[in-house]
Length: 575
Image (cartoon, rainbow, N blue to C red; front, top):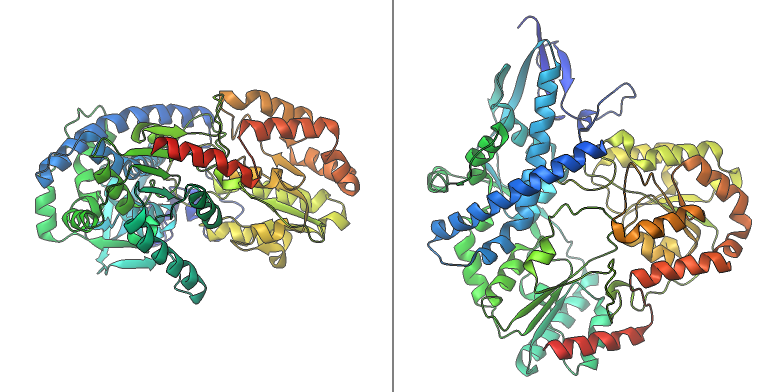
């Protein structure tokens, strides 16, 4: 076809003859070409904030309608709260990821004068198993994202659509956790505790993901009780993509999202969402419902900090318990929240009876549970430990931080460090991976600092023992873990990325003023070169110790085991 250019959605897009290529995103830059120029629509703070406000309003309209429709579909009479609790997080990611794809496509089509052809691989009615499956495949799967792009792009005029041959898709399943023998002792311990607690605890309670295993057992002993490990009862280790058959599709046609569409994107959502809802909430709901019903027991209190986001079985279990008004559900903030807005539209505040936040002006009488008993043994402290922000390959949520691959602070900062750090300090530089989902970042970092300096996921605490100074380029839980144990600095542009919420503006001012937060990597390099030999002297100075105490008090950090006493009193009072 003459005078046509090809629109590329992912690395899987089949090439169409020798046409010029236009790319929908930097995720297509598979070979990390330096001349690959792409502007991410959410790198601009103003656009990011405006889209967040729009999607929050759309989310509220859709979740209300969908909650009613799911009741109708299953012929149930559950409350809106029941369904909202179940689908909230999936719907956040679904609307965010699809709107990003829609808007990126619209901008590309508008700015190209030549005629465009979209040539894609054809698959049949792919559907994620549950919320976690949708998240994982949306974050980094070229295959799943190509499928989503192909659905969206067929709604645009002025684009020629060509299908590649239809590809047979078999259910794609991944195991999230390995079955190594090392975990057997913990598994047996949990089973024994569950057997005893479900038969002896007079007032039953579940604390999930909030404390370490050791701290949870200590806490329960203070309450004179045994812990209940709900994750062992509701174990589900797989994420999966599957396909809908003709019967499934016909039944899903009955679902109607009754919202007034204000634009073409909303028209698309009304049409497509019924076929993209995870099977957990539709075809598999009855099976999962009956499974959970067998594991219902009188439970007075549920305290959770992690799994109420992505474990649909656990959310269903909580929702069925919440039918009883005597059951209280408290959501505990997982880590340090610095952001000026929430990507999940205040999910935990809306679904819990009480939301326990650490970044607040309110005085909590208990401490941040993640760091109780937290202690890092010192070894030969000589390493410069860098912990970086690791973005998803594909956008699944609007939050703070850079969005384009080439805007990731780790790449820029480590390049500047390699060029300007004193050679003796540079030799001690290592990078600790948190959870890289885009392998391009790993390749880039290894190219900058060498492969042997890149430490894989799970190595952070081990490497922290050897750290003389820690650099974090994002202000989340890892920063607090470092702060209580080692000299630590932040390195990011607080105006462009990671702008603080109102509770933290004064702290950010103090951090910048006292060289604990840097906007510019060159200034950070100058500070490190100058203070490296006496970094502990700087860290333990009266001025810096005062600021550290302000942060520790702000986030209710208490590392002594005595702080479990206040938690035990809180639980007893709420039982």
